[in-house]
Length: 168
Image 1 (cartoon, rainbow, N blue to C red):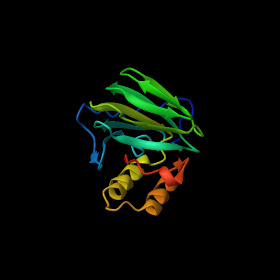
Image 2: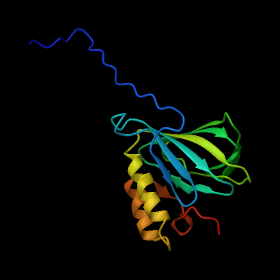
Image 3: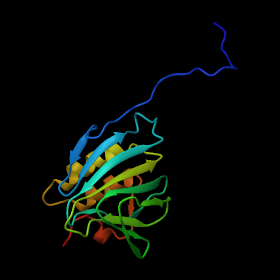
């Protein structure tokens, strides 16, 4: 059969992920649900639902070299640090954080925060979250192991002496 160079081949490869669907990880302080994975998107996009209970830290100040990150606040008030500035992000807030932009996020309130986190490209981010699940559930947390995981998945703490996402 001769290849057709002139017509598009249409295929249905869509994924519809309903509320409460997706693989869910419970970390020591947060919950992550995989909505669109690296495998689904050919490593182009990762969409994750994050639940931060009261006073939980999602991530301390860090940056990425090869991916951009977008935050969409769905419920509660998210505290975001971008560079040296801190912002209160209410529901409906969209924060686009391009690569090489130091950022961190946490819940400073007594109410749960829910947000959608988007990575582009996704850089197999599910491996990072699964590694976090393992690392943050160890007692004590091993900082060298944590940093190795961070670096493998394109995350670089601004201050390695203050990188573990736990309140002191």
